[in-house]
Image 1: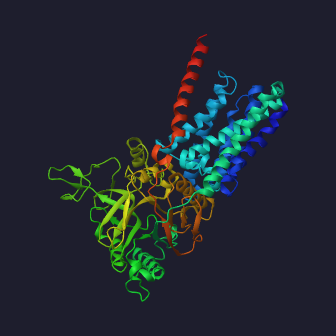
Image 2 (image 1 turned 180 degrees about the horizontal axis):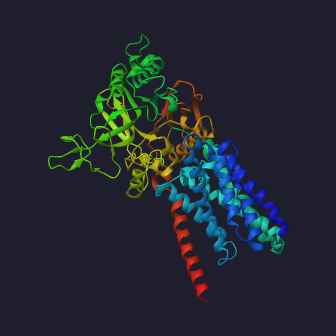
Image 3 (image 1 turned 45 degrees about the horizontal axis):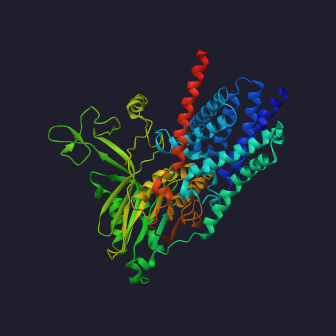
Amino acid sequence: MANYRRLFPILALSSAVLLSVPYIIPHTGWLMLIGFIPLLSMENIAFQTGKKHFWIWHYLTFVLWNAFTTFWVCNATVGGGIFAVLANSLQMSVVFGLFRLSRKSLRGAAPYVFLALLWIAWEKYYLTVAQISWPWLVLGNGFAGNVALVQWYEYTGVLGGSLWVWAVNLGIFGLMMSLADGSFFARSLRSRAILVSAVVLSVLFPVLASEHLYYHYEEEEKPLEVAAAQPDFDPYHKFESMTQAQQTAFLLNQLEEALPDRMLTSDKFDSLEAQKPLLILAPETFTSDVWLNMPWDSPTLRAMKDFLRDVPGATFITGASTHEFWAENENGSPRLDRGLYPYLRDDAPSITARRMSNGMWYESHNSAVRIDSTNTLDFYHKSKLVVGTELTPYPQIFCRLDNMLGGVMARDLAQGYAKNFKVRGTDTFLSCHVAPVICYESVYGEWCRDYVRDGAQAIAIITNDAWWGNTPGYRQHLRYASLRAIETRRDIVRCANTGISAIINQRGDVLEKTQWWKPAVLRGRVNLSDRKTHFVLYGDVVGKISAVFAVLMLLSLVVRLVTKKRD
């Protein structure tokens, strides 16, 4: 057995590659179903031989997996990318380490069941509770390039895919081990047939069920016209070649050329079509000149309002970095609204407030702004924020530390709840509700579910993926939107600054898309839906059940270890 240790580098690399490829190359999701087998085999050798310091090998496996799959984060922030790889790998390694610890007290299949439950419970925590959250490599996301395989996500959500990954990996691994030690042939013929059948069914049944759902799913024809503007501005050189006013003019000119039948000023204007609702999208953080205390002072919003005068029935949703200054009441207490006069004291009005050069204090948001032809404004502030570049987690601790470092972390404030926008045409009866999902939020299934529970009939994603460059990052992000379409059975229109903008149907198929890093306006239709899937109605049942049983098994393990130590 000692000679098998030479296999460790090969086995570690094999698992890392098998788990990475599905996130990078479409139609390779099936590799997830065998991705953990080399790692489990390596761990079994280490357990049988009593190898010490094995944590190095499983941590290395997870580091390689994270690095191969999400290296592109370093394009935006080198330090953040390295931290994401090492920290996420460490958490995976802790979960795997607890599994290894459980093997000292639990026997048979119990430690492996504990591993699967604990892993899914950790993913559940990442997706719902954690402030420092990076759920990009949730196992169920590995099937984003194989939507025909996971149509049953409308029942289970993405963690159903994680459960499938573990069930198949552990089933095949268990069969391999029983063949290797001869115990398989010691079983009765009936027992062997049941074991093999269980493994085969764990692979085939979800596939066959998904294929049936995929080819028999039909959308109700209830169209909403959409136009997603992709201006293609390099975020690293956003204002070097164009001012904000020039960028706004460029985007509005794009839309005017793409919508001749909706423009009153065009000889191609179609009055019948113009009565129907039209949703126009501009990408995330398109402008930064919006102060919530006085929003119409924004030149960008005023320009968009003027544009809508010539587009009857249109509703505009644009991304914006918005700000809000603190003011004082008559009694001198600070508040975040127009107030009486700006708060100019030296003491900060809140732990997250920042001070401007003129002495004013302000807060910031990554927002979606809704404007319609009635000059109505509505705002939604991004709630699933990226740590470091948007969010300072645990502000009572890290904001004070950040102040000592000179304020290097962003401190955007979250909305805290999902909020839908109304889209209406010239006829007040022609209206619908759309979810304004901002960038990173599209990775969180249960967050997107909240929009649909609240009445969203379609999903609009605004994003800016250019920070990552021409890497797998923006393609992965697009594919994750398909999973949200399946979970909620909602059509999606996606507007990305530099691409890929897309229209995705309720089966998760990308029907139309733009090219990367090219200006474009994607015009088309999405179908509205009022149907609520099992996942929308009941949430992530797989994650909840896994969390409960993982905690119970963890408590049982602690009791066993304490009792054994006393004995």
